[in-house]
Image 1: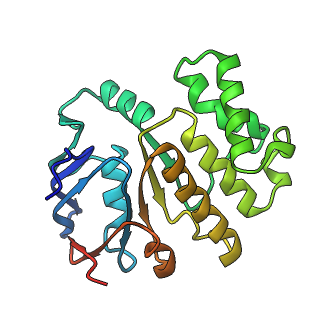
Image 2: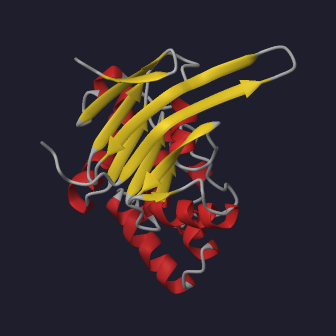
Length: 230
């Protein structure tokens, strides 16, 4: 029996969207324990609520009902400013679209979250350079994103997600816009950081082979999360 306390607990998460004609129940009581250092994949058909769940876990969206506990403390019972501070310090995001700032070079893109959080600019720059080296872009640190391939741009997004040394990375279809080879490189990078620094990864994906690389696999069906038996 695993007695290690979860890093993160998803508690009875419900999410509904309503308009004047009907209510759509996207998540219907999702529960999940996530322990430090785990790698988790979540699969499901389009529109099943995978991204909605990931956004709630990362506090980008609020549940209709339920809560997220991080190190046994409620996320959504805090003030909006405290939630934003929690997110900036504890969660790194990697999206399907890299969302890089095209007018800035790679170092500036990676260090941006640290600078706006108040980190000393020189320290943020040093950390960004180290991360760009770790993802294999040390020779392109002063290039603009438009000068990179799609796979290289996603490497920058991974580095940016790590700049605050968060305990958790949430990855929403991180290989969805990439060819299989580039996607494999990104997956290997994420798993490498999991092994070397122990970062916890929760990834939404449609890619079954990549999902199977994770230590735990789940599927969403009819608004409920199931552990994959395969």
